[in-house]
Length: 323
Ligand SMILES: NC(=O)c1ccc[n+]([C@@H]2O[C@H](COP(=O)([O-])OP(=O)(O)OC[C@H]3O[C@@H](n4cnc5c(N)ncnc54)[C@H](O)[C@@H]3O)[C@@H](O)[C@H]2O)c1
Picture 1: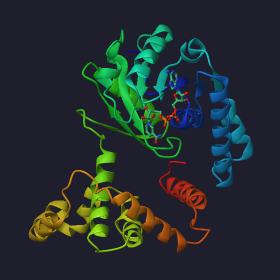
Picture 2 (picture 1 turned 90 degrees about the vertical axis):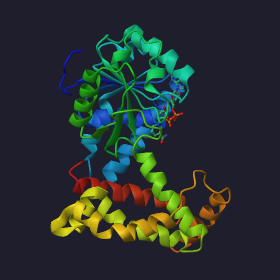
Picture 3 (picture 1 turned 90 degrees about the horizontal axis):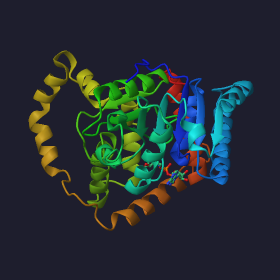
Picture 4 (picture 1 turned 60 degrees about the horizontal axis):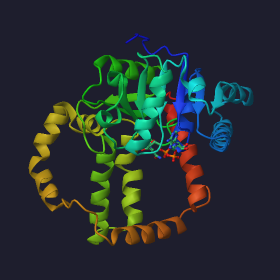
């Protein structure tokens, strides 16, 4: 494996749908010459439009001046030729459809043109890297690089390994993601849902439980997160928050101090492993009610809510020095 220490000048984003276009944009935002591969011209046109829309939003939010946005756009080359996309690329991010057959076919095509020591990271949300690279000539250079939507804004990327992934591949992927301003975390072993989806679902299970048992409304559960712990979690993770909460005793002291109380809460909390069938409808009614109480500025329709989220996200990322 060639050590690049994350210094990549040419990268390829393969399969530029919802996630792949955003990866291409992220690479270009980091100053990298980027090849964006799609199977058809029509898909490339959609990716091009999505890049333009996302950049317009970044300009509107004061992240880039017009000429900077045009320079970023100019770093992306759209192609339907795998050879053109992959030859000479120093890092390859694959974001095709979430099926083993599709990934297997792509692995074959990618390896036809990619240098043998180039890292190939899959955006897969749940397929096993071992299985994706099953027929690969160089399985050691494959890893997972799971982003959160949209990767050009959300810094987290979860790096996963297959049984034959080389440690140097993980190191290379980590260095690359760090170099483009992302925050990689490495899963030391395979775990369904990776880290973040498990955390999200642990919280969301308890939201459903609280609402379904009549403790609070969907709206109040959302408020409780947004204006309570969610504000702190946007700054630092739960263990650091509790470390501060524990005062001189730190997180260890806090756990010790609250032990009896926490045990009572935990015993009363949901432990079920399937969401109750009625939850979807209950949640939707709650969300519709909640939206009717919001303003256009903070989002009272799915469209204005998305615009509000993107604006706030950009402001928070600026505070984190990520934009
Ligand atoms: N959407 C998300 O929120 C999200 C988040 C994280 C990871 N992911 C993962 O990212 C990957 C892509 O998801 P998406 O939501 O962007 O899907 P998508 O359907 O929007 O895009 C998939 C792209 O792959 C292309 N494609 C499909 N089959 C192909 C093939 N045989 N050869 C070449 N290209 C092919 C499609 O034309 C399309 O451009 C999946 O592995 C998914 O699990 C998605």
